Image (cartoon, rainbow, N blue to C red; front, side):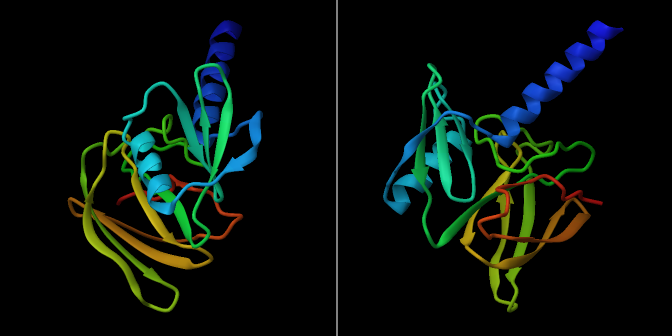
Length: 178
């Protein structure tokens, strides 16, 4: 029984660590990159196109870890915030900072109607988006704003709010479709 509890605790620790993208040995120098290049790099990690490294993303940095454990940090755009949302029906996981190479959402390869307004009522997103193999919808939004979001899939819906300030996490896994 104790061995089963230890194994379950170890598994949960590894899973949560992979999802939260926390790092302990980040190169103190932050690399600068053009906005389009950093977005492309984030997309490649999120789409599982780069397999030799792991990557997580905070409100200000993309943190990449190579096979030897060396970490590099890349600055994100000053005016845009990355957020990854995993809507779900039955299963989710706690997450703060998104692991581009480790987080897994329930709704893989699903079309989700996404509608987002800023706090002034301006429509930011109004489209059907398809979740990739990781079950997340990746968005780049203006920083320091609060958003209202509505997501729909096969007659189920969720409405919520989230914000994009420096203190906010980049992984949202709390939106249950009902």
